[in-house]
Every structure is written in C-alpha cells, then in structure tokens.
Amino acid sequence: EKPKQVGYYSDLMDGDVVQHHLSIMHSKYNRWRLSKEERKNSEEVSLILSEFYDGGQLFKSKTSNFWVLMTQILNLPPTFRGKLGIGMFLSAIYSGEHLEAE
Image (cartoon, rainbow, N blue to C red; front, side):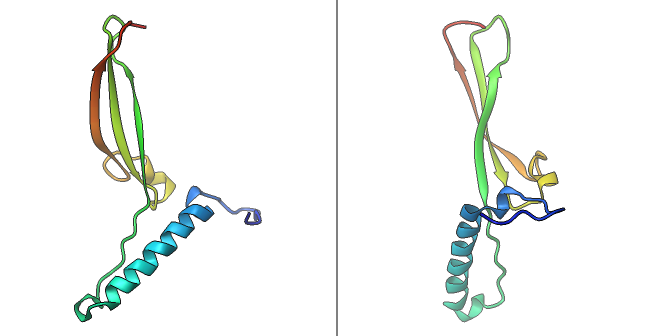
C-alpha cells in the first residue's frame, strides 16, 4: 500500500490494479507503434472503462422495471467522470415486467 501524504488526494486511478492495466496497455501500444514505420507518429489513447446498471420501478401502480447500462471513462478527472455525455454514456436500456408492484 502506498503511504498517505498530507494534502494528497487519492483516487481509484492510483490503485495497483488500474496502474497494472495501464502499464500493460502502454506496452502493447508501444509494440504496435514500433511494428510499422507509418505508426511512429501515432498517439496512445488507453481508456479505463467501468460499466454499471442503475434503475428501478417507474410507476407505483405498474409492475415494470426500467434499467440502464452506463459506461464511465475512469481516466478523466473525478469532476468529469459523472457528467452525462462527457465521462458517462448510456450504453443500453432494459425494460421488463415483475410480479408485484411495490
């Protein structure tokens, strides 16, 4: 575990797992870039993505659910990650029925 410093903001992007995956992506990008001369001026764009479902029952009297699958770009600063259309995107919508209204 990394030592905590006074005034230092720790984020999930500082975690060992995320850093490990970014390192692997960087290595793969470098191998790809160096494999052909025309790729030498390309730029790396490695994204760490998160997907999650959110939803609920829309109407008290109906037995239907509404669920959305959201994709979030975790490489962005925390202030932009949760902004729809900037750091978070709607990937899928599910609507279904259940037995009882709540």
